[in-house]
Length: 342
Image (cartoon, rainbow, N blue to C red):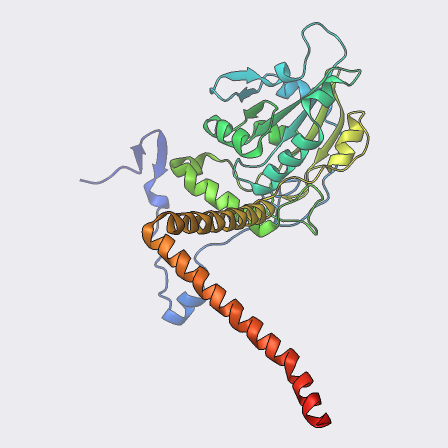
């Protein structure tokens, strides 16, 4: 049976006469090794920075436009119970009065640097200080982890302000915050723990969290500070590295407070020193108490009273011997003088 000039396959009409067999010459093993398996286009066609930064880059602190704020207004943030709230509900007042809201975007919930920042912020800018301001002002925290870890985070940082979660990180991206693991050139003033101490604390919290260690959030994501006022952003600061939160004096000035530095807190190492000295005092007092109790017990027992009597007798004999020796030493020169005169 001969095939027609054209065969129908699917919806395409293929010409059989156009198909020709063209054998490919075999290559040697050496030529195969030199031939790349696939071509890779190393040129970057997309505009803008790459997704992940490995250095301290120059991020601008320009306030987001009204258009961007409208785009992120209805994005959900989750409270500690997992209940979603539109982002705009965090900073817009219901009675249209003039108010301000400082929203602090942190890194993952196990980040020791951000925890140190919130500890210093909480001791320097207290809720009472905000209430004393002429303009109603509040502070909110947003992290990129799961809301299950919010109670742990609030307990570790002793933060008195509400904490929310944005696991999708859409707010971070839309508001211009970047992703990096760079530590930055120097340690900020709000870091009162050393970097090794912060790392050890973060590891301990991660191990203690168990399965929650995978819910902390993106380790690459960094945050920033945004001061919302009358529906817009009057000031913002975007982190350029993992330790680049706005310094406490700058934040205080932006809120209308003085530029005072955060007070020194009770750090982990100072707590160890205080505990060690307190333990030494307690051991010393306990040894003194044991010694007094032993003395009282020895005196109250019959054997103890006999021993006390023997000690008194021995003490009297030793005292008499010492008195005789001293009297002999005193009379010795007088006898020698009388002998020489005769």
